[in-house]
Image (cartoon, rainbow, N blue to C red; front, top):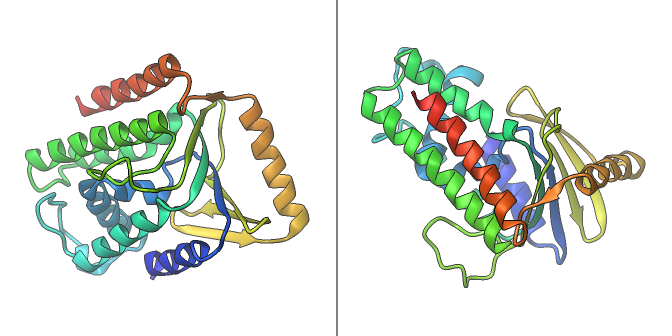
Length: 239
């Protein structure tokens, strides 16, 4: 229901002539988990088992080669395609990747992967996700894994700021009107289109962006350093 509602909203956004997304990212944008199928499967399993408490998953371990909910994974593919159509500006720090990395490590330590190879598959998939997002930053455009860069997609601007804290905050500018969505309790959002509130949130976003480093299309050295630090952190937690 959560993903279906999100898909309906994003499809609506894409019916509008002008749509832009601004994200203050404590964690990956939910859509980005779905850029790599193995990460999509892992995150959906994690959410269903630990956040939504699906009783059908009691006692089950995660397998990277079989999914208990293929219909949900089809929704994630649709969400990725819709996300790729929207221009985005994102503010990241090194903490942006840590939540998911720690979840993977927790599964490895707790024996919640079906096999050791499942753990390796998910760590490799995480590396692929970083590679793909770095590629989007390099080109300044969104893309789907394995597709041509020549296909028309939304633009992708990535800023780095090492002091970002707080919850994921999405700001949508839709045909000139601002909407704000603040993430809480992992899979829940509170949203508003109150003009004063949205303008205040947007101004705060702009202030942070002005004190951050743009690493998409420009800043090749800083972009490489940033993603290499993320890879080193992934390598450290991989053990």
